[in-house]
Image (cartoon, rainbow, N blue to C red; front, side, top):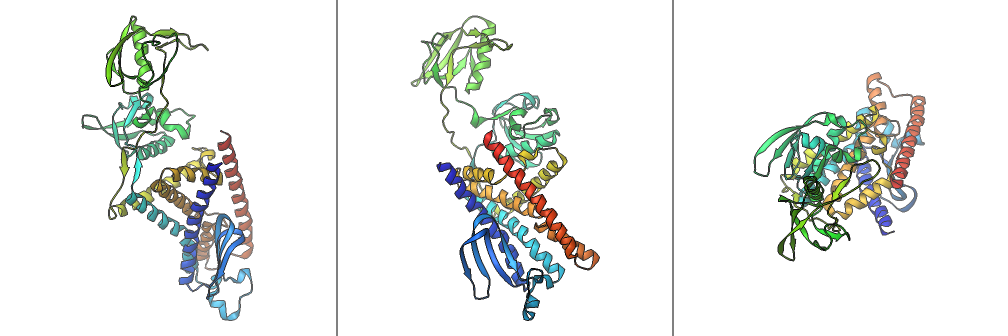
Length: 453
């Protein structure tokens, strides 16, 4: 239950920050253009708090924190006294109206830059972009354990998060991508990852697994958690033993054990299993046992040991810049996130990615906000920045009722040299509302599917 309330809290915080900044962009530019602002509301519905300023603007915090609005003096929405006509939004030149409408999304892009700058200055703890195991397509590209991936294409990957995101996005296009790799001996090479060999039914949320990459920090340490009675290891290995080698082959993770045991079993006869126990090195002679797998699968070889319960792995990398260096880094990251979101929308409209993983509702956003907040302030700032970029670009879509729809009307006005008729705008409003309602329904549906899965 605590996770439920935490998710609600961080959703309110996230939307409160993003919506306030978005609406402040409209508000600030409107005031600079001489437009009278009647109300600045964060949220919809019943007012929880409100205050009227000396200039007549009413500031409101409302009960439903899923948006907000700036209400301006406008003849289309009510009678305007003659002495205030010069302050009406609809009386302003079209370029000023464009500036006022565009200010909201631009404010979100500015906020994303500021959040990313703060994230870089604080420092985001992460894991190094070091390969743990490489199979399948990754092995075909000549990746090996302990390789550090420095870049994917033109995208530098100082941490595993950058590497994971870059490869996940590249996998969607199924095009070969170059990797800059640093070997354990310090040499640097370039290899091509053949992503065109990925299966047609790509699981977009598990792309790295289908590529064949497991990061070093996710490897299970080769610690014995339990020994099954009656198996070859029973009475010879004990809970807490660290397996260091099998038949003279070194073991660095629990994932190394199964193939080495299988090789030992196929060779026949006993082999030496080396372990560390209470600070001492021991060598135990064991002969693997072959067990039938069933369901038509081939039999497998076992020693009879199970892994110890995993423990949290400490971070071994930090994404951090000084205040000055963080400025260009934040600009690059804002531009990168914007481009990736635009490309993702293109993929969704073209059917190359499923809308199930593209459109998310408040439940998914709340859960993500809580998860990022638990990882620390830098991670939450990173999440807010991505959400701010998303809000900016989605608002720029040419859908009536969104900022992009209004901008479309004003661009048409620039071309035809007269305002779009109220009838056309009314029809557009209905179409826009229908589209938004459909997207909201899809978002809630996806939320339910994610919860059920």
